Length: 224
Image 1 (tube, helix red, strand yellow):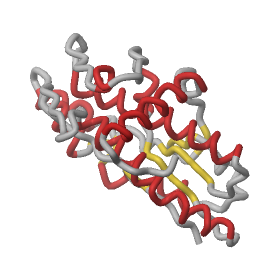
Image 2: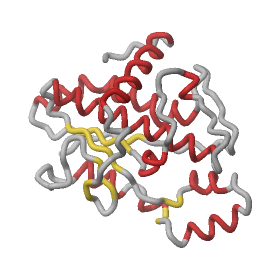
Image 3: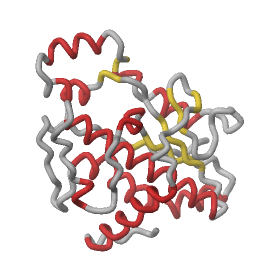
């Protein structure tokens, strides 16, 4: 039986980013930092469970949009809070930036698990192009929102299908060729290549280093 974690929330801010009580933009706080803290808190228990020969998996929800990000700095709070004001959809750009952070963190954690000889499996799942409530809220920030919602409704999947890839990643047998530690799985449940930035060890280390510094500043005790 697989034990897995699926965490992701799309924040729509109408093009006006808000910060949480710790001064972190909502996309980064919810899509990246919250799952990071939650996973690290549970990791000792996951390791202990995996040592008992139980199939333990961490499934992080990524996005194909991580490949579209051209701003690759993750070493400060200012970078995390970048507004992307000069893009066609700042809300979507900030969302994609937070998803690149998820990919960087996931790949960094996969490396750490491997180096520690862990039996915990980590997978990244892209749900596909889903016309979710969050996607609709993003589209509503554009000119002629009804047109864009109608048009994308012709090519995007209904939100009921949004969990298919994550469920596959969490439950498919380990002998499935697409279920490999550190894999990025996309519809229809197959392996796919991540961006060069997501696979950059130095960039992964940069994100991890600042995340640790930030958690220390916030006095959030997490085993790293």
